[in-house]
Image (cartoon, rainbow, N blue to C red; front, side):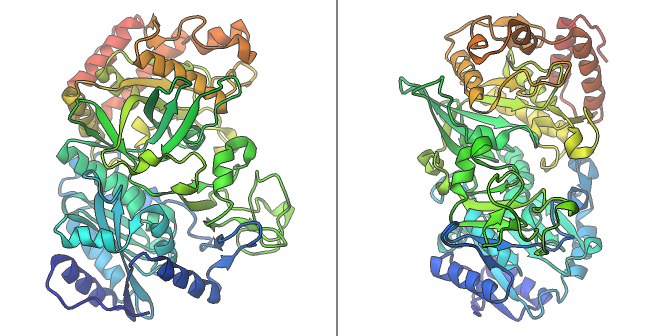
Length: 589
């Protein structure tokens, strides 16, 4: 097992020796990412009862990992941005001074890997030969993290070669510690490209290539270097004539992001094809043509599994039938994974391995996960490996709003689109929180992930737009408009492709639109409401904005935006004032 760090002079190797000296592991293993290595790690975990091999005939090469019951989700309240100035982190982040954070973490790390293996995981975010990719090394004492990183990133020798060649890299240090919630922190040091995580072995707390690197650190890098690191899916649409467009879309949780990334065209749209470039993160760069080009930095999916079935997301359901690492799902009597919404079979054991009691709550944890290679997706796009990325025709923002946001509208300009993205919000559902309709603002769906002050973040979006001569058009969608009785007005799922087709037609200037204070909206007949069984009354609601609610929404958003003063760009306030005037309000200030 031991694979000691070579005694050679280099910055990355000296860092490894320093960390080994602090954490004092029993041995060190530098990961090469080979199938033989990963199979060996899996077998050792199975032998030690840390990993359970699932029913091979039904779920070949699938495994179940059960996390500590105290360690089942992201811990945003214990996640910090460590910049010299608190103002640079902004009110959207928890802040700690770098020296204080380093001192706190060094005390936690001292001797934390005694009796454990220190795994060294070199990884690449994005295609290995892409100029837009970034590399990192995660040091961890969790074999479960290694297995996940091997799926979610490109790990091993080729990533290490890039670092050996002088490429700057993100230094990530992770230890599960004692899994004590009172000794759990995640620190980000953007200036030095470092991440330190202690006390959790779960998900984004421990897989440092994911939210920590790909969004919090990368968004900071992107601002310095002139690109965008965003919490966005990337989907390709091909029309029956062969015309292809790529769309990047940002949604807060519970707004249909994964379903849109893996959308299946409805029977009413024969000849249309959809392909998934990415389901969660997009890195966007200004291309030599003046357009915006995107890569997906991830190589796999780390998705929430409850609710996934052939009816809700057939592609996701099909891709997790093999070669999948499940976390905190339940089990059937014959060792098949089970979760609420699976439809078939019954659970025998719950997510903690206890005999399942139907009166004791859910069998699978509500945040149970699957980790699977993106190439398992039946509609995986080979363009996901294009070094130059894919050209983005449209950027789409969305949220869950019952009574105000229309089905779809288009921003008038890039600057107006930045305002649309900054105003993204969703309403809570009673099922999720016990409270219904509480508005939670989540600018660009980046509230937990922007690595610096939101005021500066909005300015950076405006700056990127000024460099674009072929800027994508920006849109907002809302699949969740309801009538007074709570009935959804739009069928959603595959039929969302009708809305995406309207977006594509607007990008190609093939159709006109109605001028509304909120933006450009579909004209009558541009969406197939009647053929979808949507009454003229509901169609009218889907393409309207109640003025009283709109006025209240603008006032609420202005108050929210002021929380980021004095760093909010004047141009953004100009856009807001223009919107207020269109709505018949004059409240500049």
